[in-house]
Image 1 (cartoon, one colour):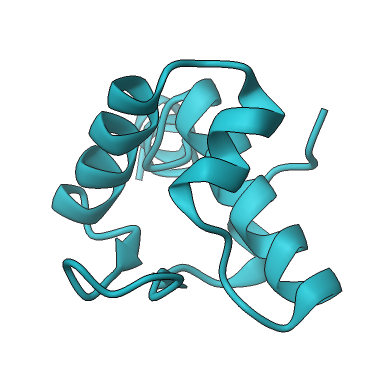
Image 2 (cartoon, one colour):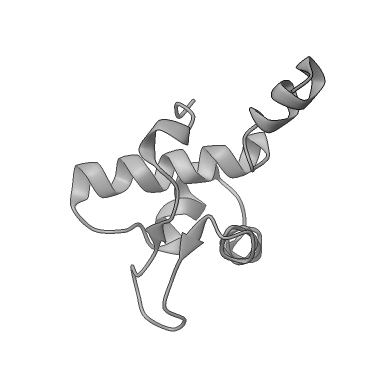
Length: 88
């Protein structure tokens, strides 16, 4: 395997901002023993509700989380904790 291939395969499967949302979800679950609501994410990231909802849909579409539509606090992570970046 050539060096460029190794570097490419070691890149995370998400953007920096997506990583921050994943980190928030992970830490929220650790601290509260439940998943965050979209409102919790909205307050932390200081963004409007449609922005949070679109991010949740994007994370789900990319296979990074699972959720049950119309069920509160149903987000679960689908990636190992080791792949989640630190929350800034």
